[in-house]
Structures are given as structure tokens and as C-alpha cells.
Image (cartoon, one colour):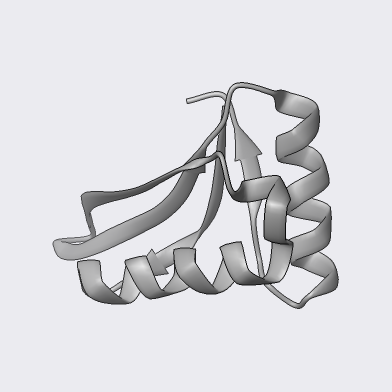
Length: 78
């Protein structure tokens, strides 16, 4: 289960998004694995920022908290 919180132009910026999200959600995401993934969209390189979790209900709860803190996110199975 993944929580994708956005894309960035650099891997460093994607990591900053993840750190910011973790700070806003707190302990819920402390055990989540932070991941960046390089993708190409319309010939442009971007970096996905997402968390990997084992529990879908925790992922949905964390995403709700992020949205309350004005951060976009969505939960995906892969």
C-alpha cells in the first residue's frame, strides 16, 4: 500500500515533501518507508514522493490527516 503525496522536479525536493508530510502526520508515518521514484511524464523527468505501508487503514488515516494539513495525497495498492 502506498500513500503518494506528490511529484517534484528533483529527488531532493521529493525527499523534502516526504519529510514535511511525516512531520505533519507524526507517529502514524514513523514506521512507513519513505520512497522516491524517478518517472518520465511527457518527456519530462519527475520524482514521485510516497510512503510504503503494510496497513491500508493506517494509510487512509494518514492521508486524511495530510489533507487536513493542506497536503495532497492518495492511497494506492501499487
